[in-house]
Structure formats: C-alpha cells, structure tokens
Image 1 (cartoon, helix red, strand yellow):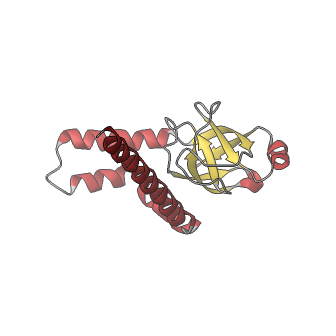
Image 2: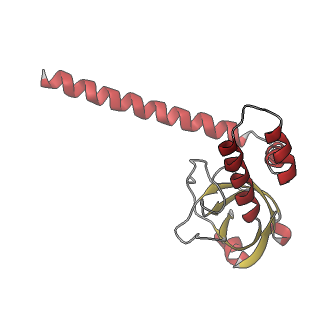
Length: 166
C-alpha cells in the first residue's frame, strides 16, 4: 500500500512539473513573437492623462466611489514612475524573473517602481527604445534599472549613466 501511495505522489509531481514546463515554453513563444510596435501600442493605450481616465470612469453608472478612488490612485502612481533613473548594464545568461529568456529589449527594475511586464520607453542615447520590464536584481532598488546586453564588454562600456523613462 505504501508503494502505491508513493507512486501516486511521484506521478502527480512529475505531471505537475511537465505542465509547468509546457506552460513556460508556450508563454515564452507567445512573447518572443510579439512585435515591439504592438507592445508599444498596448502600453500607450493604458497610459493616458487623468482627464481621459476620469471620462472613462464617469461613463458607467455602476462604478462606486471606492472603485474610482482605486483607479485614480493607480493612475497617479504610474505617473510618478516616470522621469530620471540610474541605469547600469548586465550580461548574465538565463531566465528573467518573469521566466523569459534574456534578450535585447529586456530591463531589470524594482517591481515596486516599475511593474514586471510593463513596457517602457527608455531615453539612453544609442540605447533608446521600447523595453520590457521582465527582470529584477539584487542591487536594483528604487529608481535604478539594469539593461541587458549581449556581451559583458558592451555592458562595461555602457557603465553607469542617467536615463529617462517616458
């Protein structure tokens, strides 16, 4: 009887592991096939002025005052996350905190400042563009970000510099 129970437990663990690996590969395939313009369009559609958000909130009569306060608070905290950041670069291989493989266009940020999965427009000279916040880091706290570079030599050349996030 003990062998039967142990076998059932081992089988359920193996099935769970296989399902998890399958879900990770399906998620990564879907994200890697997305174009940067579509990511920028999605991010742009969510980021707007508070007046536009207020108009959307005022239209449906079913939304109560608590929900309006929550939406306004969320919008104002997003606006506070813009501005100047200190950027460094990293060249580690592997997976990000979100489970994606590292690649160009990935940055690491403090999830309390820039939420994982958000798309940001970075102004950093020749490194400017749209980046996906997909990773966190041990020393990435507050208004600091790490930009993934394909080579460690390039990461050293990047050094530490001030960048802007729009």
